[in-house]
Length: 89
Image (cartoon, rainbow, N blue to C red; front, top):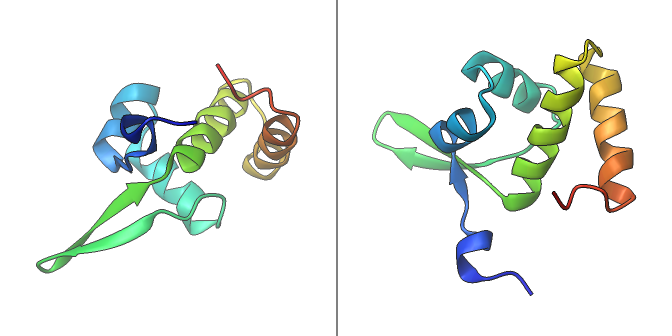
C-alpha cells in the first residue's frame, strides 16, 4: 500500500527537477496525450498536478528519449514496461 506521501501529486517543477527533463518536453508529452496531469486553476494560469503513475510514465519515456527513440516509440515501450511491472525502481 502506498503511503500518503507517495500518492501526493507532483508539480511540474518537481518532475523537471527530479528527472532533469526540459519543460517543453514535458509539455509535449502532455500535448500528445501520453500523460494527463490534473489542471488546477491559479488566477489567470493553471498549475499541473501529476500523479505517481504520470511521474513513472514520464520517467520511463524520458529514459527512452535519451537513448534516441522517437516519442511514439518511447511511449509504447514505456507502456509495455509499466504493464510488465518493471517501473518499480
